[in-house]
View 1 (cartoon, rainbow, N blue to C red):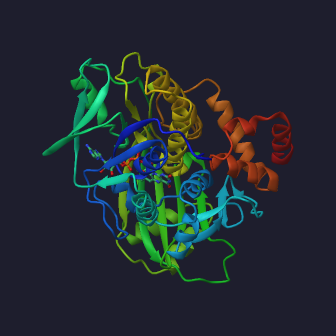
View 2 (cartoon, rainbow, N blue to C red):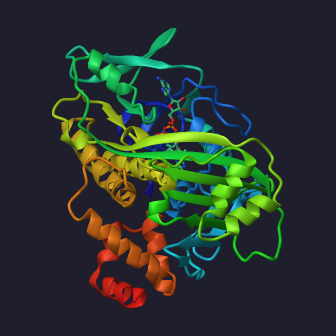
View 3 (cartoon, rainbow, N blue to C red):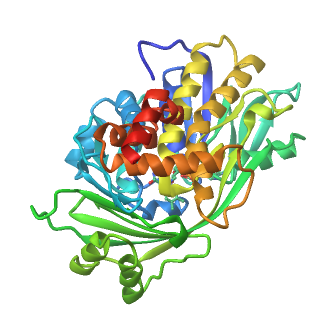
Length: 442
Ligand SMILES: Cc1cc2nc3c(=O)[nH]c(=O)nc-3n(C[C@H](O)[C@H](O)[C@H](O)COP(=O)(O)OP(=O)(O)OC[C@H]3O[C@@H](n4cnc5c(N)ncnc54)[C@H](O)[C@@H]3O)c2cc1C
């Protein structure tokens, strides 16, 4: 986290990509560079709207507690600003009706409170706050096309832009998303890509906006019904600003949620709890359903790269892009940005030691979301890829955690803390907790 006044590290940083990862990176760099230039090929709208280059923006985006905390730390008052724009204040334990493992998790009040809103509202608010920082420049409708090496060929000295003069920089952060555009740019300079892990989990989303009417008949603000793993189905309803629900159906490894009214309702009715189907049946749809396919978890191992140019790093989905049903991407990006800031605070120069330090920190940061998503996805038949030893045992244990969380508030809160990336997954294996889970699950 940014505390105190960090030291200036170098003159100019360029961030390629002004989506959530790029915005978080730029905020962290703004404390440590004289100038930060954020470049995106898309149009960055003044108003709150979906962006063509971030197609997933029309799907539900849960901001986990850890991510919300980092944003508040970097942009004081942003949570309040989001509430003023209509975001729904939300306690992830008390306000979530969470049906999984044949029952409903307990819903004690917790400290895990934060805003729930659409992805465009969150991104537009963060972007507006970032744009107010004097040393930050946002350049949209500008594609980064390549890297400019220095005279020695071992360091990046700038970026090439499509149809515009190059920009000089001391550090380039690739935040261009899952495709990690800089890998093509590195290839032009003779550098290979980092090793890649892929866990295939064919995930299909179909979400639809509905009108949300406040009522005292519900004691929850959001709902999730996670079908048994053999059904490969789940559904969620999340409240958004301007009195809307976003109701999401998800199918995994061969299950594809329908987009017609009858089919959607039948899909939701097939789940063990009727709450989402009932909500769908009784709330007016406001738009057509929007489908999105997510093919695989993927993780780039920067820490295992042998050769790379100095002055180049990557961050966000470019490093790890995990199954979105766990809602981790933006929070993981924020945590990687925080790690980048800490590494810069421990460096005198943008040298090999800095690069190795950050690559290691990024690997440790994404290890938690990766183990939750890529490990957890092996409960579904048909998931393929490198399965770490012990995954099946861990997944069986997680089913016990879910059962215990149906009766034991402390287990429910700990589970939410780990799922919210507040605590690392190892916390679920601490001996006193493990005993509590096994007792409660019985
Ligand atoms: C269906 C779905 C649902 C999701 N739900 C959640 C959720 O609930 N919670 C959550 O935290 N995360 C969720 N995510 C993940 C989340 O969307 C990402 O983790 C988040 O957007 C951060 O990604 P990013 O900034 O690294 O990349 P992206 O969001 O993909 O952005 C990449 C940016 O780079 C720009 N760009 C690309 N190439 C260039 C170039 N050559 N030059 C300049 N700019 C370029 C693009 O225009 C874009 O703005 C979901 C993802 C999907 C697919």
